[in-house]
Length: 241
Image 1 (cartoon, rainbow, N blue to C red):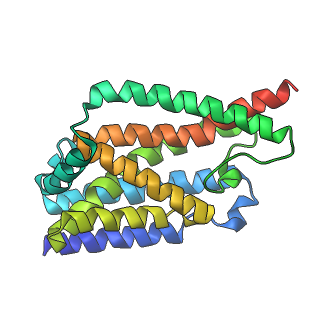
Image 2 (image 1 turned 180 degrees about the vertical axis):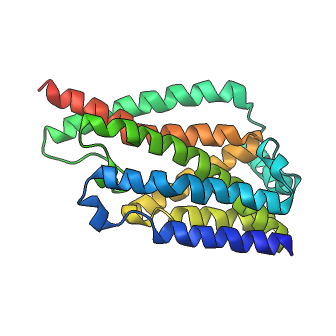
């Protein structure tokens, strides 16, 4: 009974999340309106919902150690990629790769702007990117918090509740991945596709390492790359023109 109750709770939270996701009418007010909306709801809905669901399931220990219910999926991932990932050793390489990729992306964006073209992005996030220097602090806070609570919700609480209710961990992660991608529908089809790929990467990192914090770190860095690093470097490039 408790897995079903927890799953219904999480699905209700998901419904509230997508119903209150950024809408075009908010974009016209500037990114601050979107940031305020996210900061007011995201920690409560996703963070609080995750903790409440884990309490109902009696599985708060899953925040520290990967649930044993995930082991079949983890074994499949490890077999596919050829071994476990050592999270402490892997994390620095990811940080360097994302920073380097963000820098190269910003240079490409500046080069395209000089030719009258837009930046290269899988999804349309231009409306939520900072427009002035005072937008960067709240954008960084949003990106960091989203990386933590979205991973806790979509990579842990939701698939765990689905797995306990359905008996299939593979179905659980597949459904959670699809819902994660659908939650980014405001970015258009490109954003949905990009989120699907990113969610799959986060799931692989988590299942192969057993470290939820690694997926949280990578997710937050991806957000900060899109919301902070590339726009900031592009602005510097523009000022030097």
